[in-house]
Length: 335
Ligand code: TRP
Image (cartoon, rainbow, N blue to C red):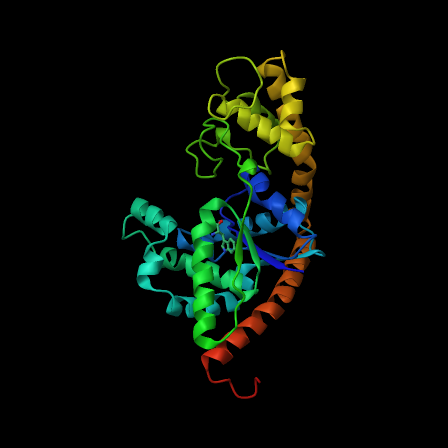
């Protein structure tokens, strides 16, 4: 089986609908066809200001939600990045392999550092993609399921893997990007031309998985719609309705054209009511399971512990090979 690895930052109190349909739903599918490793990348979230209490809480919430959304610890490896020290160790090797100019060309770094200004841009933000390259190659992953916005980081990872192998001998698997379908791109309910994002100015267009169903029903019922009355898919002319059609068809087995047919002549009100209900029905049990895992902390702790154990075996083997091929002197008694 080919190996996949992906990561998600624990930077919010809840994952949102866009995280689920754009990424996590594909992760769930991949666990049956691949040897899958999924990582809550807490170290990556240190590149911006940290609130220690929130950090712990959000890490636990992230793992709980991943499980409630369908990642099965028996069919994949779920772990917390900071539990595996080898990520930082391989990241340093990546930092010594990457060129300063090469890292400076990362568009995500350029955007974020420009917004923050140089005094508030951490060195960690600059080396972020090198830690990401380490995350991926530490597990010798063949595929990295990510959104389009991560393509450049995966290209950098490939370049670094090839560079390492050509200088020091075949050591690291050079991964392929597995860019997730644009069809699963979910937009903000209040600004349906922008991607649903936790950093949106207002949260009224963002569906949080851990929110009470009644809140999400309200948000969907007040979603921005478009002029006209027909429920038809047309991203240019009807971005609001098209977004809601995508949401409904992703959460049910109904196709776009079935939805159009079902609501022909019925108007937006009925349609939004159905989308709202579908979202509530889909996420209620997931929310309940997440909250259950978060209250009965021992089950969650066991899962996290077991995940780290599985991940560590692979990570240690890769790092040992990397150190050996670099000619780092083995510590006596540890061979
Ligand atoms: N940078 C990724 C994002 O923001 C998160 C991430 C960190 C990641 N390490 C990774 C994704 C390794 C895939 C593989 O979405």
